[in-house]
Image (cartoon, rainbow, N blue to C red):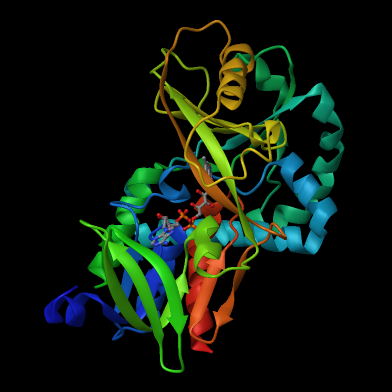
Length: 377
Ligand SMILES: Cc1cc2nc3c(=O)[nH]c(=O)nc-3n(C[C@H](O)[C@H](O)[C@H](O)COP(=O)(O)OP(=O)(O)OC[C@H]3O[C@@H](n4cnc5c(N)ncnc54)[C@H](O)[C@@H]3O)c2cc1C
């Protein structure tokens, strides 16, 4: 039971955003920017955000050549162009909002894709994809760097290397902390430890039933409008929403002396990704080994994928070097059925924004803006 005072100040708002990931915070910020006098409240189940936004690899990326070639086959050129453009705009929005690259740990060392014999046919698509995407970037986004691959020290299975100067990397923890700080400075309230159980909309607003810390006590919130930004968890509140979970497993090494590269690297059509974090290597991926098993909300790790990651590290990424695996974790991505972002009203009072499909660093801020825009109608 909450008090009159708690109810008056904390449990009612004009807009309540559920989920303090990159989309939730961006939606709240865009709403507060639009509706200056409105009370905007974000509620989040974790003690800090515990979704994909603080568990990802921090690639500020637009899609590797082989991923985009696959996207063009699936969606066609126009949709692929639009998505890449949105990723670029989303990243610009995030960086402008946080004002300094220091606030999100942004570094633009570029992005690379390792090409093996099996993928060499994708290189044929490079010219067309460069021509198609040049208007977005102002020049060709992909360059053939195969002549320089020796200096990176990769294993012999790597036969080619592509480079994109436009990709960068962030510190995901710093980014989310800075975004939360930015939101609070605008007057947005963020309540952590609020696990939403159900929503019920009527003509005038939405009732939100939740459990709150410290004793999992029941608590109700009320808002004129709600935005649900809980990523793969949306169907638990709005059954039937077309999004499924996909777990990503990640590891990070101890510091390695004279690490021979920096930047973000894509491998095996994007199913593996690695980057430097200072002088450590962060490596993730391997979902393609067990798609069915990785379609889960469970945050644990599996031996098969961890073994695949460690083998790739030893044999391809940094052969013959000394290091330890210092930390491992997993996070849950949300995949929409079309693999495209979805921003819409679930009913006249409840909006949803999701579907970054594994690329929310670049796209998330724009999806938040588009979710907030819905309420203008
Ligand atoms: C391992 C991994 C690596 C990735 N690497 C990259 C990368 O390098 N680059 C990139 O662009 N993208 C990457 N992604 C994807 C990216 O992180 C996501 O696309 C993005 O963070 C999604 O943001 P979101 O706000 O939709 O969801 P989330 O960050 O998942 O936020 C949803 C929030 O809702 C909260 N929540 C859920 N249910 C409830 C409830 N009932 N009540 C209250 N709160 C609730 C959660 O705790 C969470 O904080 C990666 C993802 C993973 C898992």
